[in-house]
Length: 113
Length: 113
Image (cartoon, each protein chain N blue to C red):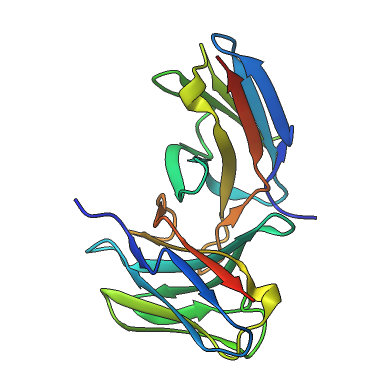
């Protein structure tokens, strides 16, 4: 199956609530990146976490990485209607050379005002 | 700073016609990626370049697809002849280094009738 699979596929929450999305992957990684995609637009990079890091924060975003479980989570706190978008994880392999970056299937988040 | 620029934003053409999608990466970036996004298959990497040299084209679906990067500031993705199943949103992205975040253009929405 595909490297980098997000869970859940879709999530609907009320404004002000927290949203948590998960990403699982299969191979050893150099880093893992989270992206957001608004409807009709390209992906926008949000945050990068390296394999030797366990947690990283950026504003209302918190990312965790568990390399033993090959999983990562993205937490958006105090969600806003503007956070409505699809969120993707991308894994950068650790094998060096030209191993390609792989994007997951995405989580579609809807924040209801 | 200008981001990744793709043209055209929308393209509607008839089956059998040649389609050329264009991309201008961010100045100084040494990696360029072409992706295709559909509801059924998600985001697929078609081909990527490093310093204008194609590195991995294993994602190119058929010989009808070809990509070039004649210089560091321009790339094209060509489909000839086009088929209805090629209808999708095509994204170009660039990065400074394989492991670094990718910067996406806003895509070309391609419809083959």
